[in-house]
Length: 362
Image (tube, rainbow, N blue to C red):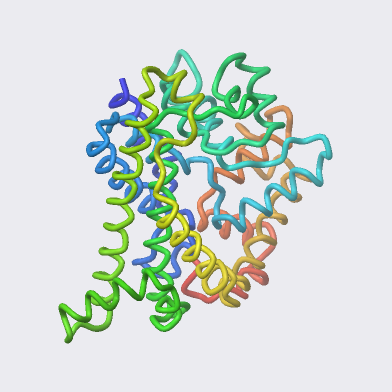
């Protein structure tokens, strides 16, 4: 069943689009930077490996990992926040935009590959894992539409499956590791900044002691590899101990237990320090902030343009009711390069010319 779910996700239009959606750096800023699709593949690889060690369902972990970002907007979190602002400003009673809820909407409704139903017809377990986070308002709306469904746990504050818990942690481990790599490659992070983190310095000292001549990217790769291996080993050991302690016998027991798949407190604290450094030195770097300011305006302009002239969208979207939801779905489904092309078509290239030319797909 979960193999079928995975296959349907891989063959979906939304999954292919992830190849041209931003992770941290805008698509086309460089061929070697991660995109949403490479991130999803890395999460799936980690999740499968850890699931095997914990004797969890590897196929379920894979489908959750591959599908968890299907609802992401173009331009990463900058695009997501801009679209959320537009939706709320257009209608104060709106639920706003949440990319996890949009991922569920993609697999439940927006993919149209079957003659008999909308969506991908995924299993409950896969859908539960895809809905990683959810606001109370979105959860209430989901519960009204599907009583006892995937939104209920957010209202009852219970846990998802062990596989969903695992994918949540694998997602964090993956993006922390690859954001270090991409940040250094982009010249926005340097080794001196990373060595301020005691646990990163520890792995660096180990590598240098064993390989005194190591330098450059090979040195960085090896430090990241050891750091990630240490985190994965800790996650397996800590989770095994918690699962053995609570010994859940069914999904209800898992739901009522505390988080069972998680790193130790020590490694969790190390990860929190790394996230804080990445937030300050990478995500808030002036170059990233400047690019994000431009792409936020791109999303805002597109939203208002379609609101004023729905016929600027394809007929399949322009005719849909309610219009605001149709616009949200259309923009959320865009790739970075398509959104930039659309903005240039509607407004000219004066705004997008403020981005470095290597970012532009035309």
